[in-house]
Image (cartoon, rainbow, N blue to C red):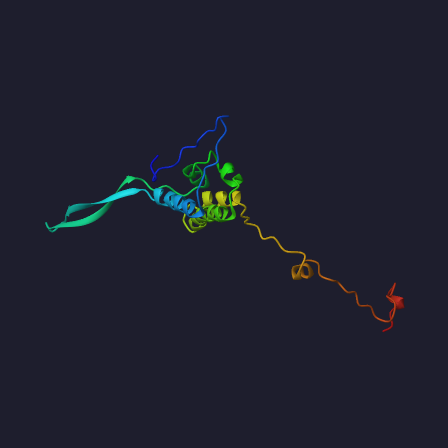
Length: 172
């Protein structure tokens, strides 16, 4: 298996998915970094010569993709690391240092979705972020100072005299 390509899930004798093994948090971090490098695509630069209207030629370097870039995804990260699904990635129990590496990689994917919100086609990013626990509604905290604003206290002030029942009871 090449270091720059996604892992293939491995099966145990019982046919169940084996949890990918990482010797250390540093090796896991390196593998996560390889995922983000892999999805950047592969390219090379070619010199393109163009003839201008005045008859002169101009040569400019142009990037040509051999493998197109891919957006980062949780499932892509899970498959690259050797998991069978994103659920398996979330459920995997590793030492605290390795859990922190996985959370950071997931946060990098989430950050890419967040940055996509500033583009013209943010709908899919909104959908993805909502599935990652984000909420686009303002939720007021009714336990602190917001509670006083949400439930104002109304005080009724009355005069010393009782309220009039008719015009005859009113002194002018």
